[in-house]
Picture 1 (cartoon, rainbow, N blue to C red):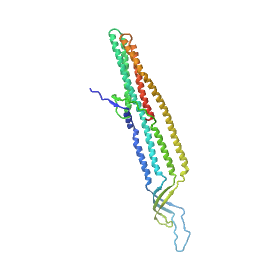
Picture 2 (cartoon, one colour; picture 1 turned 180 degrees about the vertical axis):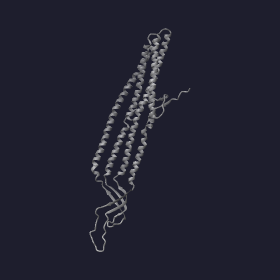
Picture 3 (cartoon, rainbow, N blue to C red; picture 1 turned 45 degrees about the horizontal axis):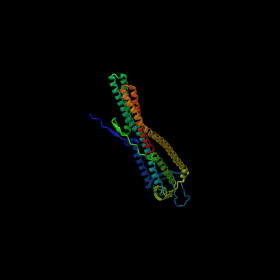
Picture 4 (spheres, one colour; picture 1 turned 135 degrees about the vertical axis):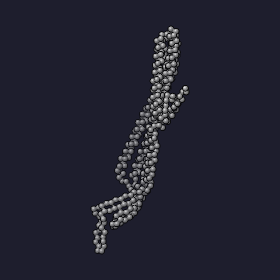
Length: 404
């Protein structure tokens, strides 16, 4: 019967697949589409603008001509008046409002896009926790198998001694019990590994089973500087505020446009006529938004406060980020020092265990004494495995903290 094929998964693949599978990734296209629509809408400000209006009014008094000329009928104006007209206008000077509206749309899209990048970046931390957690479980399973083999060797020698009448049966029972304990430990570790694999599978949207092998990554290259996406996010927010500040000024500048109005009404342009007449007129219109200057100072102050708030948030982020990096560098140095003595401890424990096995075979020590030395060596090996993986995890934590 053929063995099921082994699937190999790397950390880089996991991070890429998780980012592609994350629901928020769909928002990236929506942000770009929204920005394009906003820019297209702003561009329409360059096109001629057409408005159609109408009104019907009744007034209590109308203009009267205080003249009475014999033989001449002096007209009397109606108190109900009507007007329907269309006006087309073309901007000649808008103070740069349209241009800045497009820049504001682009700046807002950049803020939203960078907000999305910040959220997507956080997935890496979750991937690291699961990926390295599985690697640690794999290492513990391997070491547990080595422990089982050591116990089995001792059991075989003890059974031989029991058969020859050189050892008590209870010595064999003790080793058999420890063998069962290692089997239980294997079940516990495999169950936890399946749970981690299931969570990782959900994140990357790829089926993973017990035959999936995670490839231990090489330590990341040492880099300097801080490239966290949050920093670009703060910068994009400041850029958006800068554009809005310019837009605020532009909206309060004088505006100049050409217009042409045509329609019909009673009265039309001839105020002395009581008939419905068509009319038209055109010209250049100047608009100075004086009322905007009442609120301009406060609106600028609000933008300044927002900019200062972002600066404070950035400063706080950098402070916590630096604090975290200091702690991680300290832990990295600690594991490096521990690894320097791990091999020596394992070597010493192995020699003691070897001597205990020979003594067990000769009946000098019992199975309990042998197990003590086996567990001591196992603990030393587990410590080294843990230190190696923890050092590697810290390197990737440092990479995550600095965004490199």
